[in-house]
Image (tube, rainbow, N blue to C red):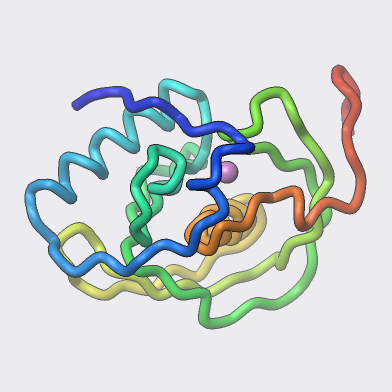
Length: 154
Ligand code: CO
């Protein structure tokens, strides 16, 4: 495994729409392992492939409840609203209050290509929306309702 360089805001790679994964091969598994190591090293709860310069529909999440790998994910249902603080490893030191769904259902493939479904709420729902946005070139700033000043507690 290896820690990869995290692309920062301003790099055009973060504004692109990613392509689906077609090959569930060793190269994908290495990428997923590297992404997870890069995410945990950066103390993030999620990381999408474009953040390491790979324009494919892949993200990893771990909100402290174990690793989730999503390939070719689709958000198929959302409900409710949450307004909580959010940040991004590509925007270091910047935090803001965003508006996101409280509940989401995501269908995705695992690293072997098998389909699975996640029903999530709260922080996990927020993380799934945040990472899925990255695959369409969208940063969390598009969902901001209020900026948070350095040191401010919400
Ligand atoms: Co992000």
